[in-house]
Length: 261
Image (cartoon, rainbow, N blue to C red; front, top):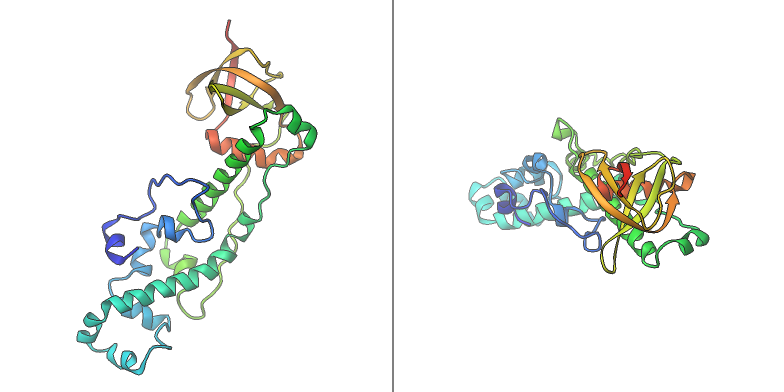
């Protein structure tokens, strides 16, 4: 990524469809770039001012040190300056991101006891693992894209200047829904060989083989589905990761089900 791309908004981290398998959570700036609000500070109009203020020229040659004050020199070696800015950002944010994202990275995924796994469709464990990875990508992406009202207080800006403070660890977001006896993991098969997990809220156990009409809790959309496989009640304490992953996948929960005649 270069400064021209940043200034024209080509890589502002907006509406990028990223596969959890391809996305490198440890280095989000390589895929999402920096939030637009931070660009004036991480890619300022004058890169030399940033390099001087951040002490990033201390190891530079005597020629560079002397020439920084010369406008002609600055123009002549502008490409070198931007390369140094890139190295500065990568160095400081690689270190800071490890600290900032450590609590999110420490989150543990769904743990399904073997008796439960035997009740689920054979492909279910892999499907749920993929949903969990997608959830973690979503959380870390959201943490990267958040910027305070005054961007100068953002850790990515403050970490560039002495005394180079380390950021506080980002908090894990609150669970969207708590384990509950009315919440169920069940499955539909929208096409042959492809299972779709459904997080549904029902007052009684859903019945495989029956068709239901669901309403989405957030959007109000409706869904008709014939259920398959063994339903799993999500009323146990360790269901939190599974609930997070399913909620993120659906952006809500399916409720208000009626059995279709």
